[in-house]
Length: 615
Ligand code: AGP
Image (cartoon, rainbow, N blue to C red; front, side):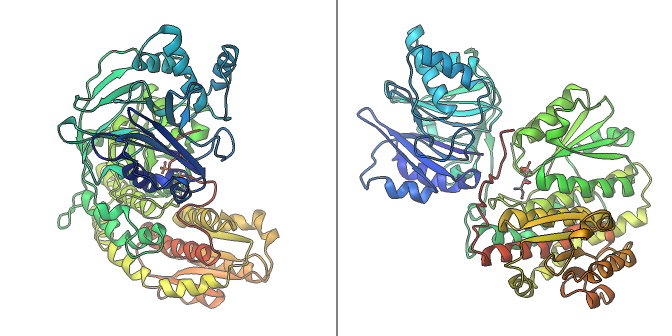
């Protein structure tokens, strides 16, 4: 949610900032801006729209400045307009700020500043921050660093900030509370990069400092980074060496990241599965599992907290863990959980699932659970993210960087980790027969191959998609472990094509949604589970009896359901419990093709942002 980039060093800042914004555009894309500072000048450019729109208004000149900040916005306070776009400058135009997050008490602070004679050009909370810093500088006759600290002490809410000042043209100050921010270290402290995540920096450095909440860092050419708390007390920090493949952050031969990421799944699933499962022996490995094993086997229950797509993988986790490990599982929307005073006690395991590891509600749910004495376990895709750092245990999904706003490869990687976790827990708890566990591990090893095979039907799925471009609403049905697959399929279609879609447990159809079925409401049925096959065939008959069109995802040797359905997408047969991964692939491709043929930008769907770091 909003992307921040900053640079201070010896190179020209502008190209680094613009390329950085392009890489962060998945975080927000309603407006963008850049500020460039030198001893002689401060230039600020802002525009509504994409980074390309910003570039178009920046005059073609040398841009010699070696210090600057930039921002791509996902609007919270105020519509996407040029005035509301970042960077924001103070009344005197001396101080400039870019911000990701929400300041909850901004109205109160704004009123105080208005009383003190400050005026505002935008409706944003960020303009309040920049003027607050300026007022602290003037009131206390203090330097920029102290003024930033004093201002931060008054802010309630979340922020990642980068601050620069005309009167201190050799300094870039950054701070974080609740929203992510990383500092990239150049050689010999000659230059520093700042960004909301590692992606804009991979070209230049792999050594990063991830700021913690309530930390402020001052970046000056030639000086070692100093990290302090907001009261000026020095803090220790660790430099993390990360290795990111540059190809991961480019589209390569694909038109969209979403398609690239769908097609990467054989590789990302292999990476995920074989990072946790030995290729030859039947051993499942999670970092810290030895320690966690005891707690897992003694757990009274597991509470899964997540949002959106990750919540759907949590639901699949519930089916898997309860069936294979016989531990009770509850799955909660993190946003509801954190505010409803949930009962969490010592002995509970709280599993936070998140691609980004930064989703504000999931992070808050994890922190709440820790305070209540639960053991926390995060399943995250982004290395070094807040959840990965703060949870007691972490299992990474190794799906690589996911840039498409609609999650695809991260979802299937989460389901793979949950499948492995369920098998490991089942064995540990001695409720899963070794023979069955071996079979599941054997099948998990071939999942990447089967996904590859499923992807070969891309062309056929595109043909199916062609017939649904004018559809306004879709029903998705599934049973058992495929019910959350249906929910996720419906979410994907909504997100990228803006077609209304509703996921339902197939048997629940009779309790309401069946009223809507007629020739204008198509139903997509995920009908691959052996266990419920007869029942799902009956559900399909019920749809047909009401003239509903059926698109069915079926096993490759399927006969009955295929005979009833109007359109069929075939997938290779696997154990019922591993089907969610395979059955999701045609749903990804279907949503993608419908949306692209409708002319939608699937990588940046309207109103969405990749990482929801505000509540
Ligand atoms: C996925 O397609 C969505 N854009 C969204 O629902 C996402 O899954 C949700 O915001 C949670 O994100 P996280 O996994 O990074 O926590």
